[in-house]
Length: 95
Image (cartoon, rainbow, N blue to C red; front, side):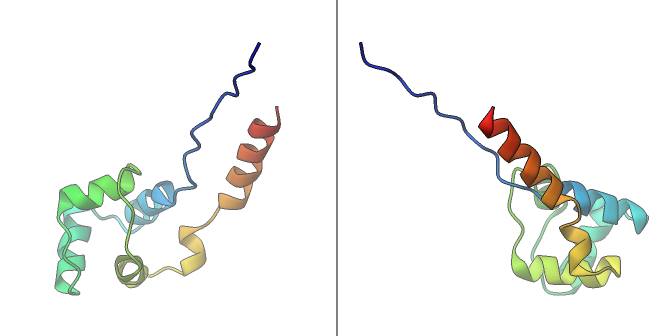
């Protein structure tokens, strides 16, 4: 009898939660952020930014650099907590 291996689809680590926290900390709406990005030369609609926040779309490096300026934060703020999430994913895979 042939043994079937189960394949698991693993969602990659996402900075979307941190982007939401930083946006709220800056007291901005998605529309406000999209406008600021556009003023900085980054073509992005509110709906595209929303897609980034929900993890459906990836963010470009240029947009990330612009968000650092808009949110007045450090790059590390975008990646906060991802080490712990990676450990949790590894533990789940080992179960």
